Length: 331
Figure 1 (cartoon, rainbow, N blue to C red):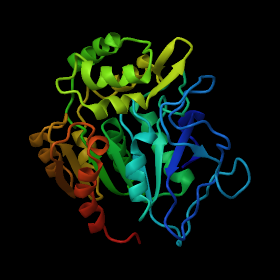
Figure 2 (cartoon, helix red, strand yellow):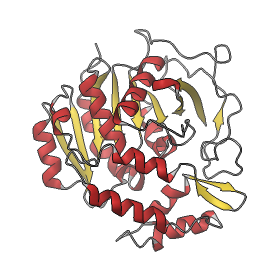
Figure 3 (cartoon, helix red, strand yellow):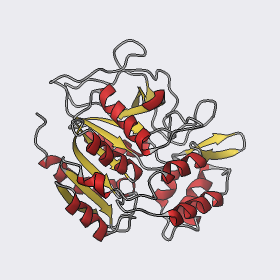
Figure 4 (tube, one colour):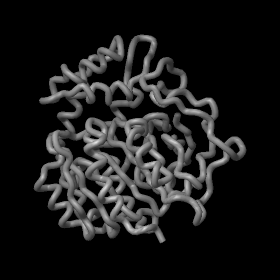
């Protein structure tokens, strides 16, 4: 079961945060809005159907609409999980349940994604995403937290750590490049989005196209199909993404043209850079990121690609666990 907690992000944008699994013994249970919320993998309000089997229940304790305050000394340390572009908090469910043994773990649906608000005019800037994560840590009383991000979420994580070192005690950066990707990369994404055969008639069609038939993917996998099935919702004419492809391109445009080495160098907390062997982050660049980070550590997940935490969760945990175990107790 999952518990939803509503968070107010930058500019008043409504964000959905999720706890998958119970907090550690003695921790504060999630409280807040979300009573009767639809399944995590279901469509935005007004849609029908569900693409995932994780069900959101009502929060425990507190009055309706209450949002947790700052944690006390008795609370377990916090962890915030940030998905990548087009992802959603539910993609972290397995990792979140594992982490809940030692942290109060919250995964955030970032603006434009999952159950969070998708403002038609944005903004979908780097500043907005970072401010949203900052708001989540403060409103949920998680800081100083371990922040784990994948792809775009990893960039948000290290930009947040550079901006608010008081809120971040450690980072896990999963398969995100610090170099600029360039305009050609954005054009490839535009073409890829246009190639989607929408609407999909069934979820089986979604899994097959992204897991076998996607012409832009050299080595599609079954779990890649599962990944994209979790971000689809059933409409009257078939299955469509829960996000706007236009908004995803707008989000991506704010970071693909720039390099992010300077902000990486400003991160003062321990930071683990994780890459899948067949992912988008190359070994040389990953090792340079570790060199630039004042307290960087390197790890790689064998036989894994860009979605290492989702494709190979046990192997991903095996490289992340030693890093987390090495962190000093929060003071």
